[in-house]
Amino acid sequence: MNPHDTDVHTISPELPAMFDGMKLAAVATVLYILVRCLNLKSPTAPPDLIYQDTPLNRFLLKSCPQLTKEYIPPLLWGKSGHLQTALYGKLGRVSSPHPCGVRKFLPMQDGATSTFDLFEPLAEHRTGGDITMVICPGIGNHSEKHYIRTFVDYSQREGYRCAVLNHLGALPNIELTSPRMFTYGCTWEFSAMVGYIKKAYPQTQLIVIGFSLGGNIVCKFLGENRNNQERVLCSVSVCQGYSALRAQETFLQWDQCRRFYNFLMADNMKKIILSHRDSLFGGTSSKRIDADLSRLYTSTSIMQIDDNIMRKFHGHSSLKEYYEKESCVHYIHNVNVPLLLVNSADDPLVHDSLLTIPRTLAEKKQNVVFALTLHGGHLGFFEGAVLFPQPLTWMDKVIVGYANAMCQWDKQKPPCQKSATRVLVEATGSDRTSQTKST
Image 1 (tube, helix red, strand yellow):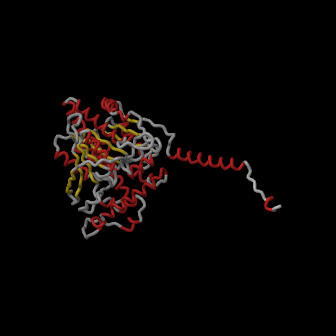
Image 2: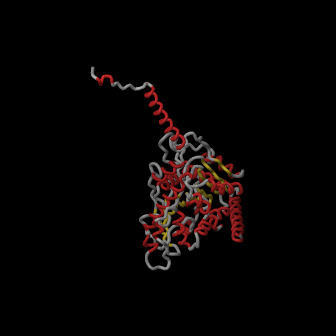
Image 3: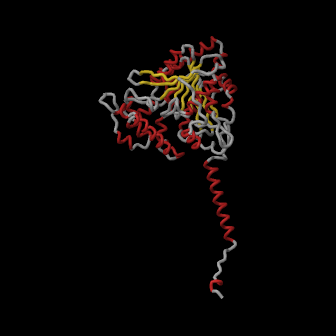
């Protein structure tokens, strides 16, 4: 007998069952993580609205259904604020159009050259009026970004003229003509664009729109001087943080990966600054910025870049002073035209504590409506069925829907009421401005 014949290995019948159980447990664990990370169990709902019961707001909610209907993001990934934000950041928009516009160059008093792109309407406005949307994009953005192009094309087809500010230094093919670039709250370039539009189109009425950092700029612009609200029908701000000083601490936290987003934004800012190195730091001009470039190279947060470079463009003595004076939270209460403030609860860049600012404002002022969606991320707001998003987002539709409602409301008002409203806005703005100065 072969001795090896007696060496028989047997497998316990329990082992295959155990292996199958481990596989099922692994699959279940992965599915659980996906469900939790993608928030698949999170419900869909209409935006949470804070507003006062006024005839205008009742008309608005009746005329702009996007504010009262469910916002339904794509089922598989749209309930994740991170994926909404990442998709916006990488893709911008789906099937982005290419609207044709004319680039305008505006010399500034300090030697800088501001640029904006002007897009004429592609159809008559539903009210028959001449309406111009003046648009301020997000940080380091311009008219060639996909989300701006998609919004402009949609607005043009709805009968709006669009003027889009290109943040100073953001366009890669436009050189700076002075040692200064855009900052968190500088309104000079936006003011110059609005002034050009008012002069070139004396009959037009304005709708002021800001995205993210642009939302801070437009609200600050409107609240800085009551004259800035003349001929403005309404304003919309989307996904801004309202106070850079309050946001500073939250941006250093790892909660919702904000510290990681902070690093990515700082890296992008470094690239923009270094692309204009000669204009900002070269030469012997007394206006050139005195900055430690070695600190710029090693910066890992927006706050470090702001402290080393950005605050110096306007002579702020400290980062705290820069954030205090550049944030719209100190000016937004002076805005008396209809104002829609939009944020998303799962925006990884804007901490929930910052949303007490628009909530309180909407509770105190009749002209303010605050809309908070459950989902949408930062400037995402994609809509869709299961996987693929639609070209137009909820954000695009709600801004144009709000604008249409405000234009219709203005058209149906008697002329005497329009005049009285303008006088009230100017008087209230004057009173509030004087109160601000006195404090």
